[in-house]
Image (tube, rainbow, N blue to C red; front, top):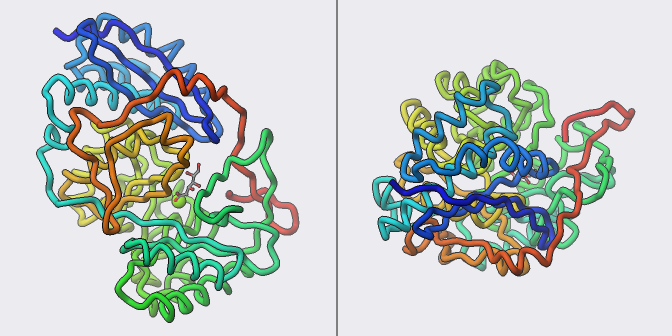
Amino acid sequence: MLKIADARVIVTCPGRNFVTLVIETSDGVRGVGDATLNGRELAVASYLNDHVIPCLIGRDAHRIEDIWQYLYRGAYWRRGPVTMSAIAAVDTALWDIKGKVAGLPLYQLLGGASRENVMVYGHANGVSIEDTIAVAADYQAQGYKAIRLQCGVPGLPSTYGVSKDKYFYEPADADLPTENVWSTSKYLRVVPELFAAARDTLGWDVHLLHDVHHRLTPIEAGRLGKDLEPYRPFWMEDAVVADNQDSFRLIRQHTTTPLAVGEIFNSVWDAKQLIQEQLVDYIRATVVHAGGITHLRRIASFADMYNVRTGCHGATDLSPVCMAAALHFDLSVPNFGIQEYMRHTEETDAVFPHSYSFADGALHPGDAPGLGVDIDEQLAAKYPYKRAYLPVNRLEDGTLFNW
Ligand code: CS2
Ligand code: MG
């Protein structure tokens, strides 16, 4: 029995907020899990501190599945982003501990490596098409084999995915929600031009991706997917809000552009119909928001039966702890697709020392036992929580819309 002796939640803000769970056993083995939920961090911190940690102390850290079921079924109020992020943090920390006790990197416990490394995609963005392509060319020069393209929309003061400093995109930008303005018609005109220019400049040996970020109707998504077909996108992400999974049937009727969805999903039930009916090509759920390694493996196995591949979310608001865990999962999972890699700032990387590394357009988790990442608690203490909200989005007539 490897008794859980202590568990604590660390909220730190090295440029942006992160929530980290640390679990320690009576033998002094320590595991970490990401519990960051952008804009709702303190809800998860409280769920862990007030409702989960009291039930963990004294349990056997090796019983990962039993603890997962205890926290999932035992909560009675199942699923949801707060609950599943809290469960994810516990699950990830326990897998970290198990790897450290075994003296093996986590991917070895998940069946070993299924590939040499993990292909990632970088984020090229700019206020204009020209700016975006210039940044994409730089990513290509850095060795990236896949690049996401997001550019400003003429006539709109700002838009999703376009950051102020190009290389680090942080949407949670204010103490109260910033209000963005949106126009689908203006947006639908610029994206095909962006991809045409990208293929002209970058050629065809690079995967190009785009994130619609939940903003179209199904028929508009069919239109955009069709307009992008000549440029062969790797995927069109979050084309529509996925509350009604039937919507994707309509998109599929009009375009062969591959579809990705799921970064806001927190369990397999959010994706069941999309996967079973092969309405998507990539599932974006990731470790921190979908119940940890244990549940993400279930989602991936179910997806594999229907030719759906993984494409884990990897934005800056997922900490290096989640990135490390996702890379172990990515290295091993048979139906791997791609891994998002928005990178973190040096300030964040200093708080979360890690062994994953980038080379030739790919990441590798490294071979340190467990996850190969930790949190420097002394340094973390220097960055107190700073409330920050994701923006809200309104149409030009003021209608509250999807951000
Ligand atoms: C985006 C994210 O990475 C992505 O695909 O959708 O930037 C997303 O907006 C943030 O993670 C929200 O916190
Ligand atoms: Mg996205």
